[in-house]
Amino acid sequence: MSTAPGTDRNTDRRTDRRGGLAAAGAAGVTVVLWASAFVSIRSAGEVYSPGALALGRLLAGVLVLGVLCLVRREGWPPRSAWRGIGLSGLLWFGGYMVVLNWGERQVDAGTAALVVNVGPLLVALLAARLLGDAMPPRLMAGMAVSFAGAVTVGLSMSGGSGSSGLGVALCLLAAVCYAAGVVAQKPALGTASVLQVTTFGCLVGTVACLPFAGQLVREAADAPLSATLNMVYLGVFPTALAFTTWAYALARTTAGRMGATTYAVPALVVLMSWLALGEVPAPPALLGGALCLAGVAVSRSRPSPAAPVTPTPSDDTRPERVG
Image (tube, rainbow, N blue to C red; front, side):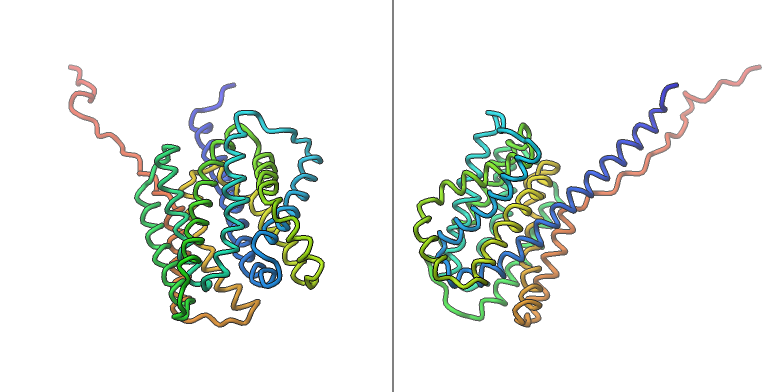
């Protein structure tokens, strides 16, 4: 007995809807954990230098990911995926973390957040140019709203302090590394598993940061336990877990749409700083956070399906009268 075509279409739509919800949930986990990283970096960064902090974070992350790979018997990624894994590992896992840690020592948090949030725009532009991703009007409108919110958050958090030109340049370089890493990672997810891409990308970043091993050993010997625990937290959750959920979601949507999702990070950082550090946000920061979230909602929304049009019988299709 055959299944009706309409039933197949309904089943496909339900499957697509469940897949979309799973990807959105994974993206949400990523955004929350990446936002929490800013709070932990603030504490650990007072003790650990940028390179040492990045290496310690990556070592913790690759250890957790390596154990998961062994348990799941993932094996080595296919040769076709190594180019994307290598580039994303160097640019995103390695370069981005070191440069951002360094940049945030030179400028205030508001300026850093403002400059780094150029990243999602660069992701969308690079993905459209190199991957052929579409840039629908809803995505562009949502990114514009979120960028306005990020600017509002950044200006409200800057407190009018002077900014170092070096710090601004480093944060901009971090945004470029992030965008290029995302675009490089996307094709690798077509031939390798999410866990393979994340684990070996983290391993490449770890190897790239090995020159900071001496600093890490010296600083860890004198660091308070709280700073070291923050560094381990950064490796286990915002790195191992969040980069895996990111890759899972990226494999199921476009790079531009995933980049737009990260505009929610500044809004969550404001809230977490308020709750964890007792920093009461100014009204402009709350407004900017609301704009960030609204823009993400717009960018991830989909147009409603058009209602089916019932054809009106024409004179030519009406049955002829007999007699």
